[in-house]
Image 1 (cartoon, each protein chain N blue to C red):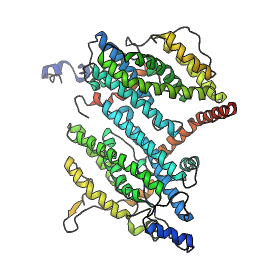
Image 2 (image 1 turned 180 degrees about the vertical axis):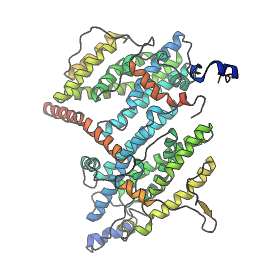
Image 3 (image 1 turned 90 degrees about the horizontal axis):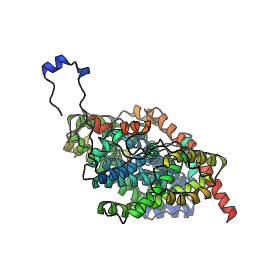
Length: 322
Length: 251
């Protein structure tokens, strides 16, 4: 569902022939493949980014999974279940893409469960009504697509190829989410109020999904040079706002930002100041659901331990008799 | 919506004494509709239970498999409800628990992974046998649904059987859990129609799983007459909350 390109320190001190050839290939828009030479920092950055993306997909199953048993029609129930399943699938092939860089999925999962690895801050917000399911599809998946379309051209081949499929599914989710919100907005007064309340709660956290403002990036951005990242946080954020505001107005909804206005000369929607204190609090573990989300993942992992042990024990017995 | 009470009625009956309006529906059950509802309710209720695993399964691969199986079952339920000629959502969301025709085994809480797998295995073997013969059913709706459902159910049997063998023939703990689940669930298999054929399909898998087949003793009633366990009411309270809270709304 979500990935955010990381700002990395500039480590461009390596002037070995391999490093020069590596950068030349990237400048030439060639893909780097698992067996190719790559700088250690490139490998580390990608492992961190791809695994964070995978963790986000897995943790992201929880807020939406919260409504599978309460989806208001059988069609919606099936669609939501399929969507959450897609996210699990994204997690699986992103973990596989990370494994091509020489890490084990189990180690990445340990990093998530121990709290050492990050995942998208957006999933630390609660889903309080059915409208949240539509709004997550519309806004959260919409923001994710903005981030992820450029990743289809990421310099690392396995990641780029995984993202092509992920993006295709995400745009389907986004349309599906918008359609849920549209149905609510055309429904009863209570349904429309539900949709407005969801937009009020999700709008600002969605803008934070693009990461801190460009002015806070102190280091020159190696990720850009390596073509892991192609656009700045603020650029993508603006693109998202420009695409989304007319959609919200079409629904008849009001954005929770009194400063939101269209700048005729710039041709962009200008928005108010983002509360970065809230963003930092959620990132550092103090969001509304941080503890619950990790607790749920840990419980699933711990409760499943005997199952995984049984599968291994059985496989070992089979090998012995084979 | 019934008309609002008159002022006189309001004086006679303060609000807490006035009868509540109900959104529940009752269905005229011809033998055909009763058959369809029994099949549909089995699929919906078991599909709902399996969907509860989403986000909590023991491995990521199993998350995907459970979601697949739940989707298959919910899809089967929808096709069967539609075959009654009535609105699928009204049937799912506006019937009270005693009007549900599913077997009790489908509504029991998931328990641990062993319980979920043993139940899926026992139920899927019966469904598999039913759907394979239903391909020839005189009712063209049922025959058409069977054509798709038999492929899905064959996979459910294979998946559940694979896990049952892994658990039964895995560690001491997994064996104990699988045997406990089998013992607890066996009395809920009393309404399986062609029991001999079912036992013939179940027994070899239990043997491979090194599990002891429970004795054929006392059985729970079927539940198809509408007398359910305490669990179904809770399941439906959760599932039906939105259509019940906002009657007439479109979602």
